[in-house]
Image (cartoon, rainbow, N blue to C red; front, side, top):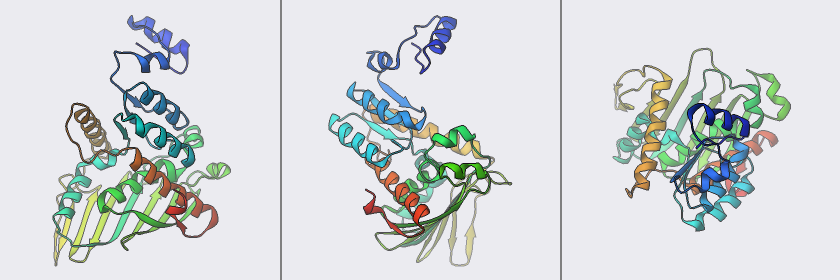
Length: 304
């Protein structure tokens, strides 16, 4: 079966390979389909997610659930009672370096976390047409790190303050977006967090997370192919450099999909981000957007 938003494209591809062109609805409701992966443009996520869930299909849905937090909340309220497996595309949870950081944190190597420093600096700007419908840097890029912050610390974000500017591509300011931003957050447990976030750098992709605790620090990201960097006392243990960005991110997508499939086969997979995780990360993103607009701290609970 071949389905496409443009029926003529589906028909052309189906004819080339001897397949059958169908509508998206026919594909979702087919008995031959066990699960649906939604990686379409963001404005279509909510409708497709609801349709697949009503058809009883397991769903892997890219983030965010919808550009509107209210609509995302509505989707979650409708889909959760259907009791179908759903995971939201926060693949960074499955990055091998971030996973090892979490394991070492759980082992108590650095004590209680007091400060989280996150860096996300993309290498090239996405196309302008993509940016127009992406929901903005907070909902599209930073949201991965809002989820990671919750995942790593086991805590919720209480307040957010954001500052941003359209420096790499000034045109995006016309629709209220930024490409360079700095965020400060406070967790409910008291820890502080910060994220510096850019859409384009002149030196390649850079992604790092540093956890500072009472007894040491852990770092995962760009320079750690074999695991996090560990500081204890006056010692620094650093395993080396990642060969490139794509090899690391590609692996996290594979691991997330593998975990999703294992869960469908009956295995318990604790780290799978679900609908409520998607909603929580999006609430933080909404608070960040409001902070950008109003220039003040915003309580995440006021956005939920």
